[in-house]
Structures are given as structure tokens and as C-alpha cells.
Length: 399
Image (cartoon, rainbow, N blue to C red; front, top):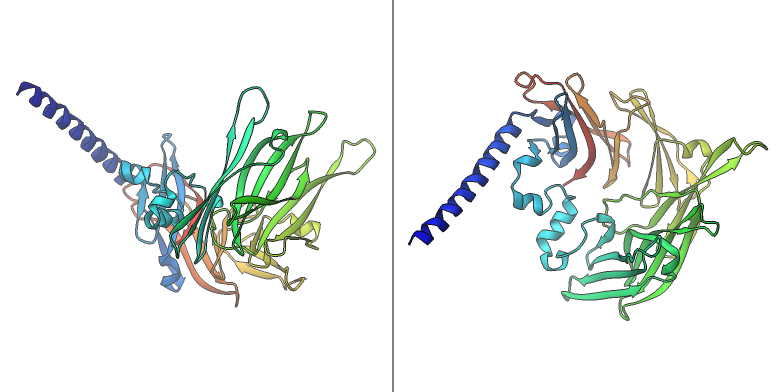
């Protein structure tokens, strides 16, 4: 009997300890600043589905992750261990896939770029790299993917070795698309140049036939020593018509070779036709703060005082649209706002808030360029919370 009492005592101590931990965490978090998204003008419906993620820091050295919506602030310490383990701070799309397709999602990396979803399929791809310690890069790299057919609930497994794998130092998946039943995977790779002092970075598109489960094509889109940026939305798992790439080259401007000038170039890859298109966009426009592709339109944003200049290039029409200027209170030339396009709407959010400032949120209809909503992130308990703090926002999701 004594043995059972000892076991019961141990269990009670553990349960009590966990309860005290979460009570203290919740109490500490409740004393932190409480934020909400408050409407200033426009339709409340446009603000109801906005959720922003970020980090708060104080002068006392406190740091904590959180998210804010129209109703509440949720600190990471307030959520349970199980919620945290299941991805409280993952994108809403991945959380939905976890809830609806638990078996398929089990054991997968939770990076949105590695997933694709439409009405018929959910696809996933990763690269397994094995390092032996004898080489700079992996000794073996293998594609490991799965495609779920929603109608039949069947899963196709793909397990293929990467071509020419011995020459690459790494290979990371950057996008996944299903095109006419084939799986197309965008991969960023790096290999050492012959002299050993430089690296060449490449962007490949690998095509897998889901019937035979085999790799059927390998396209090299870009191979540059100066690198390049993929400008697609890394949180979007839906079908994308184009992949947008900004190449960064350097031109020598005098004979001493000490003065160099950046010479960017914008190219678009059409997933359906497998064609690369060079976009006739000027060097000055390529220096703008943010470039986003949505469908077949490329949006270029230039930040100014209390305004955002927007230039739009239509790939399908092959022309630049008229310039639009949006009023965004609180923007500075040095600002780094979150800019997101979803459902023909442009979302712009100032990323910094402290006791003196309120981070603005503006939603604009891209079909009419008329404002739909203006709001601000406000501190709801400023009078109770006296410590100086800074809130840095890093991502925006639309539920």
C-alpha cells in the first residue's frame, strides 16, 4: 500500500507543479500590455479577419512572442504545452491542414513553401541531405514527397535521388506546384565554383510524374555567383501562375574594378508553359522597397512620408499600369511595413509600436484602388502598464 501512496504523491506533485507553472505564466502574461486592432474607418468586416504576429521587448530585457487580432492579445506563455507543440504560431493554412488531414501531415516539416493545395490535391516535398563529414556538402541528397488525392484519399509517395548531387553544398525546397497532375518543385541549390573561392547559387525546377513516381525533368532557371531572390509569397500554398525571381548582378564601373554598381533583373517563370520571361522593368523601379507578384501582375512599392507609391506591371498584357499613390499615416522613408496581397486586396501594416505610436493598418481594394478599412493597433491597458516597451510585428495572416 505504501508503494501506491508514493506513486500517488509523485503524480500529485507533478500535476501541482504543472498547474503552478501555467498559473504563474498566465498571471505574468496578463500583466503585459494588452493590444487590439481598432477600427478608425471603413468596414469592420475587413478588420475582423486580420491577425498579426510579432514580438514584444521591454527596457527590462523581457521578450515574448505574441499575436494580436481585433479582440485580444495572446502571449506564447499563455498557451498550453500541447497547443504550442501543435503549432500555435504556424500559419492558419498549415493549422487547418493539421486539423483536417492529420495522417497526411504527420512527420512533415511545417514550412509553407513545401506544401501545395487545391481542390484536388495536397502535395508536399522536402530534401533529405546526409552529411558524412568528408565533404563540404552532403554526401547524399534525396527528394522525399507525398501527393494526397482528396477525392480518392490515396497517397502517392515520391523518393528520388537528386541529379548531380555530389557537386552541391545544399538544396532547399522553395515552392511546390501541381501542374496537370505533375508535381513541380522549385529548389535553391549552391555549388562551389572551380577555383573554390566562390559559390554559384542556382534555382532549379524539378518535375515529377505522379503516375510513375519518377523525376522526369530538371530545369535550371538561374545560375549566378551574386545570388538571387525569389519574390513569391512564402506563406501561400495555393496555385501560383508564375515564379518571380530577382537576379542581382554587379557591373564594374571603372578600370580599377573597385567601384561596382548593382544591376538587378526581374524574370518570371510560367509553371504551365515552363517559359522564362524577362520583364522590362527599369533599374530605378527594381530598387523599390518591396516587390510582390500576384497572379500575372507584379506590384512594386516605394515608401514615402505618409504614403505608398505603387507601380504595377502586367505580365500577360506586357505593360506598366498607371502609378497609384496611397495615403498611409505614419509611414516614413525608413519604414519597413508588412505588405501583403490577398483576394484582390492590399494590406499594409506599420511594423513598430511603442508607448508613443500606434501601428496603422490599411486595406485597399486593388480593383478600384479605394480604401476599404483603416485601423490601428492600440494598447488597451496603457494606464496600468507603465514600463517602456517596443512591439515589432513580423507577419500578417488573413483568416
